[in-house]
Length: 72
Image (cartoon, rainbow, N blue to C red; front, side, top):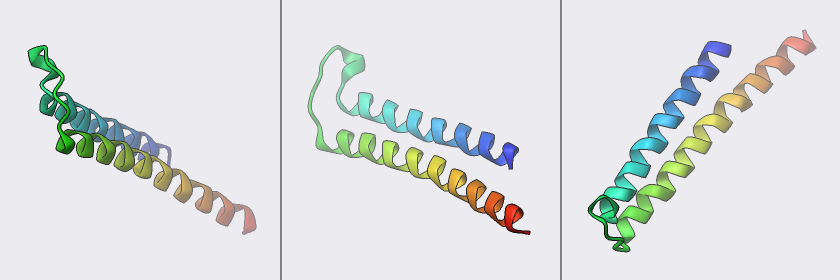
């Protein structure tokens, strides 16, 4: 389970990084401007949600498997 947790944490960081890059790219931050684009904010929110849900899901599965081991 430890290997799965590390893999999911790494995947969550990649998902968040891609969505953060898309947010900066959509707001033209790399060009020295800051243009508020709604779609960029959507990708930022989606990245945060997906990253957190990945991490919480694997933690929940780990807790459930620990409870199952404790009961037996």
